[in-house]
Structure formats: C-alpha cells, structure tokens
View 1 (cartoon, rainbow, N blue to C red):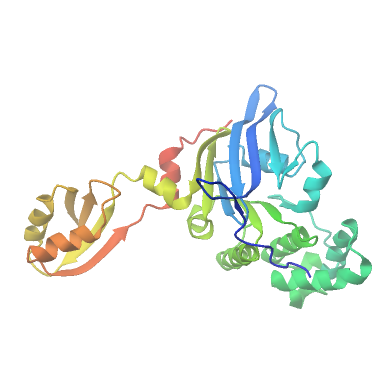
View 2: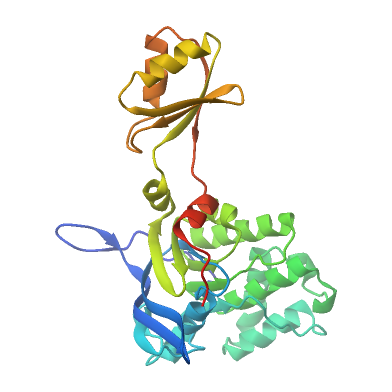
Length: 330
C-alpha cells in the first residue's frame, strides 16, 4: 500500500537515555571547490520523522550539503549516512530511500501529468499494473487529482512545484530532501505546500527542507539547523535556539489603573530586569528566560494594579537568524 504509515516511536534502547533513531547523519562532512570550502566539517543529525529546517544565507552551503546527501556530489572528506547507508559506498541504496527535489528542476512541458509520473514510476521499476494506482495516490496527496490529464506546460508555477513533489514521492521514499520547495510561489501556494509537508510528516516521512521563508519554518519544523560559510552554528529544537538567543523573557502588559504605579511595582521585583512604556503598554523584560511570565501578573495583582492584558513576546526565527549569523558567504 502506497504511503503506508511506518512504525512511529522507534527509540534506541539505552539504560540511561532514550533517543530517537537517526535518519540522516553527517560526520565532519566537507566539500571544497578549489580554495573555497563550501561545507566545512559539518556534523548533523536528523531524527526519523523530523520535519527539519535547514537555514542559511545564499552561499552558506545548504544546496551543496543536500546534493551530497542526494549522492549527486562526493564529499571532499568526511562521511554521511542515510538510514544507515553511506552516501558514497552505498549510493544505490541511498537513492532508493530518498526523494530529492532541487531548487530548480526541469519538467517535460509537453507531457500530460499522469504520463510524466508514469515515466518516472517506470524508471523506478514500479510494475506497470501498480503504476496507475501509485500515480493516483501521489496526485491525491499533493492535490492535483483534477489535473491528471492536463499538459504540464499549462500548469501554474505552484502546480508545477506540487507535481515536482509528486515525482519525488513516486517510489515512496522514507527521507525527503527538499531544496527551497516554496521558492517563487504566491502566499496561497506556499501555504498549500506547507500543509502537504505536514501531512507527509504525519505519515512518518523524514523531511529536510531548506528555505529562506523563516517565518514559515518556525511553525512548520520541529527542529532546525543554521549554517553559515559551511559551518554549523546551531542544530536542535526551534525553541532551543530561541532560548539561547533570548536575553530574557519579554512580556507586554496593559493596566486600567495607574500605569506609573504598575511600573514601580514591577521595577521593585528582583526578577524584573527592565520596564519601559511603549504604545500604551508596558514592555517588561524578565532577568532570566527561565522565569515564568505569570510572575508579572502576580506582582501587579498583589500590588493592587488592575491587569487587562498580558502577552509574551516570542522571539521569531528571523530575528534569531540575524543575531547568530553575520551574513557571510563563501
């Protein structure tokens, strides 16, 4: 059955710690072009069923890394493994378990949608009697069932991107390597693409997605890696990099009572680092990211202030990216 859900929750047994199994690992992965080091001793781990965001400026080494993982480039040194297969020594095995979608890909514009997918199904040696069902399955998954007889050249950019994703899925790979899959799409098409990726993760696929649209990655991905000049700066949960970069938790509050009284109440507490008035509200910076924002409400209410609004100011992934990178390229 196509796109059947694999076992979830497989965990590596360890008497002290339980860790999810790795789907993709790189070890000191390096790629040089002459004197230029495009990927520099990259150590990366992507767990099974991760929706993993790969973030970096143009020229940071994202595409080179994905091309190595897809077996199109050989590393200059170091190694990479996908589901236990070495990308150099076991390249054929790797190609059977991955689906790679480059940032720019060609399509046969004079072919029909089903004809195009049937061709790639044949390339993957899917038996003819199974290909029709497989093609129908992937078209339904990417929302192109109604375009099955359309000429590819007549499709919009967004539909062609979804067709490219359908092609990647034709052999039911376990790991997807997607290089800027939403590039050039309008807002609606991007939202639709991200919804498809979330469904693929729900089905148990491991997905690595590079993108410049960081606001979407922060809600889409459960883990991210930030790379600059070929070097890994951060890899881990999205909230983890926010916590590392946040100088202290920021809370916005509004009171219906005397605002100056509220300012004095908050400033007198040792866990409040700063209080400033801005846009009719109070911006409260706590001294530690570990301090719960409920402290602000407790201080105000106990002091007699009438609190009407409280919200936490969450550090966005775009701001984190600007803080941890310098904009340097190769």
